[in-house]
Picture 1 (cartoon, rainbow, N blue to C red):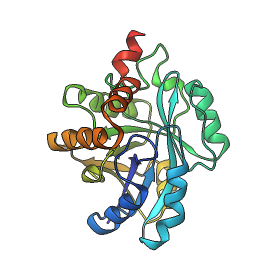
Picture 2: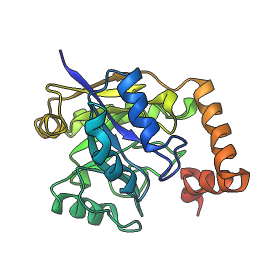
Picture 3: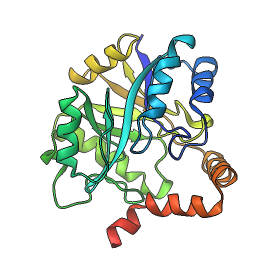
Length: 239
């Protein structure tokens, strides 16, 4: 039976509301995930910390990063060093591949956040290793973006991943990637060989509200607004 991996999770090292330790404890106790990737924005410190602790929880960690490129967000998986923000998507993908990592387009076509697929270059122009075909956190008014991503992945023959894009404990594993094996290296091999599939469900309304309230509680209203504006695809498109 295939195992499950959630390859898009945020911690308090960026705009998530759960600490690395809370994430590890939750995954080990409340999910059947075998592998997770911590993919904080423009930072791999939390993922590296999780990797050092993972053996205590019986799960495996992929060191990842959600990179702010000038063309839209990009996820690097299996990283040793952080990738700087502000590069082009092509430059960032080259930097990921130079480390032996995998480049994934998260939430492509989603206009509510900075996403690939909205600029002048077609997605086929990028040397991607996979596309996130089901992002559980996509707002209800942008969910057609998932179907567009799935169609594109089929058209250009790229593996399609499912991920929670979790920013809180309640949504971890909401969507996931299925793969044969149990380890992070098995995930790598499955993506490279196109032997992955996705499944899962969208966040519930309470998940959105709970995440917003917790973010305001932790960071304050002003920082919550700054994060919302910084991550807004609508603002960037209009800039």
